Length: 94
Length: 388
Image (cartoon, rainbow over all chains, first blue to last red; front, side, top):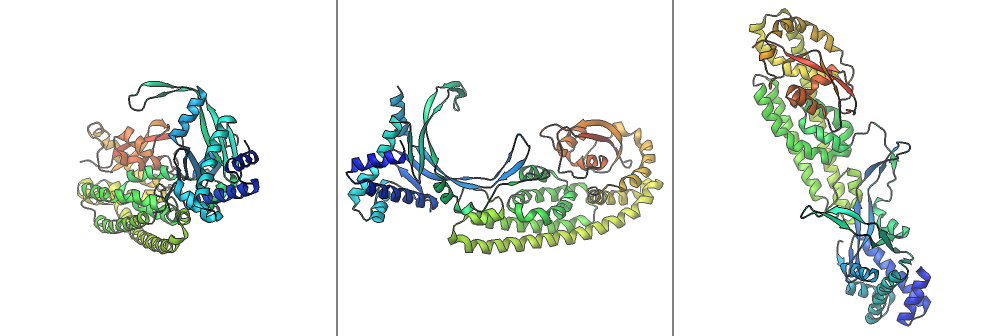
């Protein structure tokens, strides 16, 4: 499902126009991004948790050339699905 | 900051941002996440512009160990939900560190952890020289971790010097600066600890990194701390240099005085002076080894004669905590294995980890911080310098 399909479906469900929905999706994404930027944790019960993780700097070696690179520290966004969501996918498998 | 946001908060924020009522935004977010789940169940992948991609991936089955019981268990193959953040999201979140780029490091870069492994085991006399050598280059970057290491060592060192050489006049004088600097260290580590509320899981690795982690609100605060750091390290360096000079000078003079006496072998009466100059002697060697280790020859020669005399006693003498030995010939060749340090090698052959400088000296190693796997080290036979 790509973004277009997603927005269309969401518009249908909410009974709104596609353009209106698209704007709201953007707003929500923007909100999540802003919150993550502030190192906040977004806890959505039944779905999962969005948060950020700190990665320390490390040295990686290119196995081909032996070149050693220092990878700088960085902050990465992460998502952990909730147990409830995991269970849902378990059910569909069986 | 580090707040937890849940559905109601998110709904309120969205309602405010889009100028809609709360029930509408509640409805919207509920459908938003429900459709993601639906899409995942149907297609296994959902892309949302600006946020990222939710994707189901297959995980192959594998055997593992139950952490509680230690039993082997089989993990079946299953599907797992992953989230791949979009580039825009990644970039925005990583903004504080955006200015860092990967760069190539040269081969002689020593990992901090390697360094700190050596540090606590260093010989007491060496510590000062090490500080002298390391402080100017390393300290600005590695300060926090180094200092926490050093903080633990000085008390032990002080004890050591007391045990070994109560007759050394210089030592007491040296203890004080060391303690002083350790006090400084403690202070700066404390300040550093309190300066990091933003990321509790993040160790203050390097100062430049550290200052960038924190939010703009704390930046001012941190600048003050940065200045304190710099001042403290300058004080420590100056103290180190001053005492280093003082000590090196003393060592040189006492060395010159002592040499002829030992060579002429008027042993009994000279014992105290010999004992006295030996530790300083080690320092002298240490200070010189990094460049070329030339004084070895003229120092060893006088003692070779002495060695023959002592050779008979050798079997009965155990290598103990005094450092009064002379390297004489190779007894064994040692091949450096993984995880080995000079102190470990020293401990293995001499039963005393503090005797490793003799190995460094004997092998004319230019850089004793860089032990390579597979390196051949000649382990010298150590002979006590005078009869007891």
